[in-house]
Image (cartoon, rainbow, N blue to C red):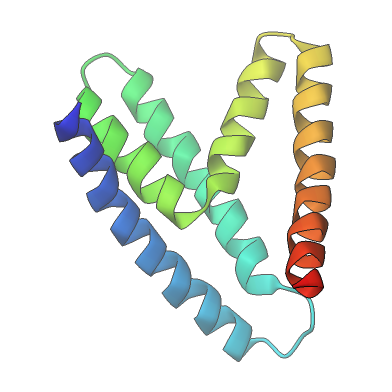
Amino acid sequence: MLKSVLIAGAGGFLGSALRFIISRYIQFTVDSVFPWGTFIVNIAGSFMIGIFLGISEKAGLMSPEWRIFFTIGICGGFTTFSSFSNDAFILLQNKELLRFAGYVGFSFSLGLVAVFLGRALIKLT
């Protein structure tokens, strides 16, 4: 277990650093109030997790350790949106339409509510 945690952590460090560099570069390069940096990182991370999981599903092309490093580590550090997108995709792939709708709808709406409540809590103090 510790080995897996260290592998994920190493990948997470790289993914977080990449996210910071790429999103900052885009935000400073593109003159817009739209959060292009975050948007592009989220889409790129979703594409990357698709590639890594596709490779790992092909017989013998990726060890479980490399799968942890790339998907949980790098993609998870780069953007958790990639994991969210993959989880939603799996629900669709398995024709779990009600669970898909609930997962996507509740994740988005409750996420917004959680941000609002967290900010409101800090404003009260």
